[in-house]
Amino acid sequence: MTLFLYATTVLIWGLTWFAISLQLGTVPVEQSIAYRFALASFTLFAALVILRKRLRLPRRAHFRLLGQGICLFSLNFICFYFATDKIPSGLVSVVFSLATILNVVNNRLFFKKPVSMKAVLGGLLGLGGLTLLLVPTLQTEGSEAAEIAMGLLLAFCGTYCFSLGNMIGKWNAANKVEPATGNAYAMFYGTVLLVCFAGLRDQPFTIDFSVDYIGALLYLAIPGSVIGFTTYLSLVGRIGPEKAAYTTVLFPVIALAVSTLFEGYIWNMTATAGLFIVMTGNIIVFSPAGFLAGKLRPSPRSAHAESRE
Image 1: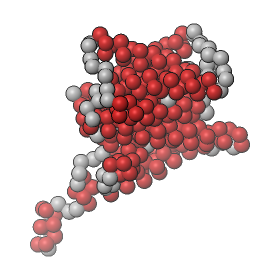
Image 2 (image 1 turned 90 degrees about the vertical axis):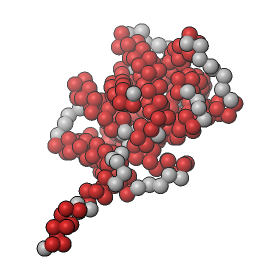
Image 3 (image 1 turned 45 degrees about the horizontal axis):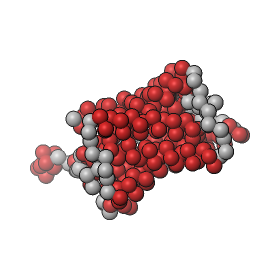
Image 4 (image 1 turned 90 degrees about the horizontal axis):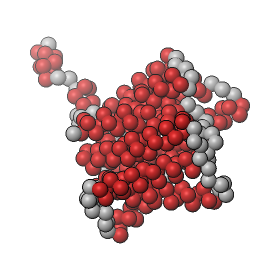
């Protein structure tokens, strides 16, 4: 079941970044996100009612789910949508892969879990590889360079919000909140916050009825949100946020492939090496305990041979 949850999350979320790019343009960002999570929340609540699942939760759980709505279903996506308007969607997904490292850091901050040497080494490799991967995009000047820098900053802020949402998801799992039920409420709270944000910007609500926009909306709401977040938070409950975030290592490959086909992202040796290093760093973070020590420590057979010499 864990493997199925991994594969489903990677495939669905690998395609969401391009779908986000299809929603940019005529409709204000916060409105597009509000439509997405309003539809997703309604779908989840309808499914829970049909399946006769228990919807009542303790008051304390609702406070945590409000935080989850802020971190996973509103503020982070405002950052991601604005970032995708400035840099290719595939690159946003690569920045998002840093969630693996941020989850390790936040686990230390909030749950006092020790940080291993492999996490430090993997994190340094991830940051170095990300820098190489972004070099082709950063080779610009003037206002375009400023736009790219802002896009990268927004993508990172969105990723950190996502990591904070993972920590709340861990608390929810420990308190027996079912992922589907928790997501339904959190998406509803996120939608309310997005509508309030749209009201503060004083922009009339509008919608684009083009095939691209509606198709992207349906994909992002149902597979991308209802299914994707349910499978991902199920992983968080099963194996913890650090290992669940390993999915973010894999779907940038899908996202960059789509970005290459439809957004004109150009590969070179530097970018290819950067992607390889990012993935290597994240693999090290989630390698079995003692993996690095086993690699660095001489095997008993070789040590015995050396002693005989």
